[in-house]
Amino acid sequence: MESPVQLLNVLEWAHSDSGTQHAGAGLPASGPRASTGLTVIVLSPVDPMSRGQLRRMAELARDEGHTVRWEEARGGAGAPVKTIGGLTRVLRAARRVVIGDPFSRYVQLLLTLTTARDLVVVDDGTATMEFIAQLASGERLVRWHRRGGRPGARDMVFAPFSASARRRLTPSGERNVEVFSSMPVEPPAGIEVTENDFSWTRARFEPPRIAKGADMVGTSLVETGVVDRDRYLEAVKRLARTHGATRYFAHRREHPEKLHQLSTETGLEIVRPDLPLELVARRGPIGRTILSFPSTVVHTLPLALAGTGVEVAVCDIDPAWLTDHASPRAQGFLSGVTGTARDVHRLQSVRIA
Image (cartoon, rainbow, N blue to C red; front, side):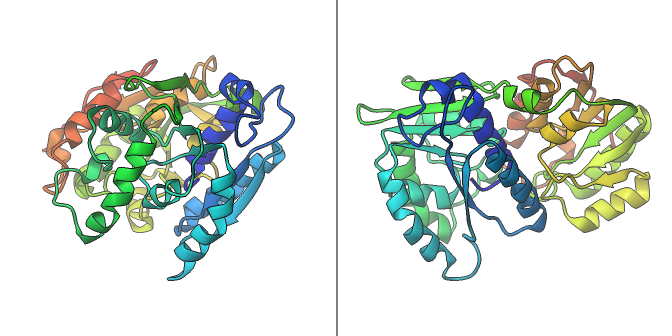
């Protein structure tokens, strides 16, 4: 696992009927009737906010009876070789491997070491939708916001590993592939899809206290080069003013300088969550309305907050906000994220002159 959300979804998978009914078939799964836990390998990222959230998620995983192995996978020039060498025996012995990000070069490298018959892909947010679409069409595995440009030198070096990962994640007589997801996906033949309904989150945390007003969820679309910074800042200001938002829950990849500018210009309280937003919202307090741009949370928050009366409202990305460097598929992908979301209120896109 490389992100807090991936680790959260491993806990959801382990708690689900899927994790329970397959217990003992590979890496043992934890669930209501399982007696042993998973071995969770964390490939630690570099940025402090992701690391902090992962540390907290690791504590929750241990509380659930799982073993967590923390790898400083990016801790210097020799770290990748040391990490891969240290995991070789574990991966070769495993009969089931659960992964969180099939686009990760690290994960693609590690998949070459396993002969596991059962592979499970747990949600890594909206990227799961793109993964399934690319797998079904036989395309190479490339993150949606990077498509459209010419492959770089590193892409060429890793191309054989990416191709190998795609083959291993394609069902065959030698292996079974399961996708555990809360996203609307249409898998190719042979892939089993199990719905992630956030039952572990709802069982682990009581319904939250509902505060007056609205909260806003941040996005890293500026940081990934998809959306123009100035237009994003203006859209946040207008949404906050229109809906009376008081807090802005920052995405873990948002730049501190951008967040400082947002706070100064809007008066919003910037909150840097210590856990994935699904858990932060479930613990509360949380606003009666949660405002978001197209992102994973428009699919996951209605599930984590089911029955609480909290409304999730999503504002589309206006095509005029996209940068010149944005992937040609960006607008269609983002519109699809919004259009397929269930139990959300759709807001009109903010018009900026």
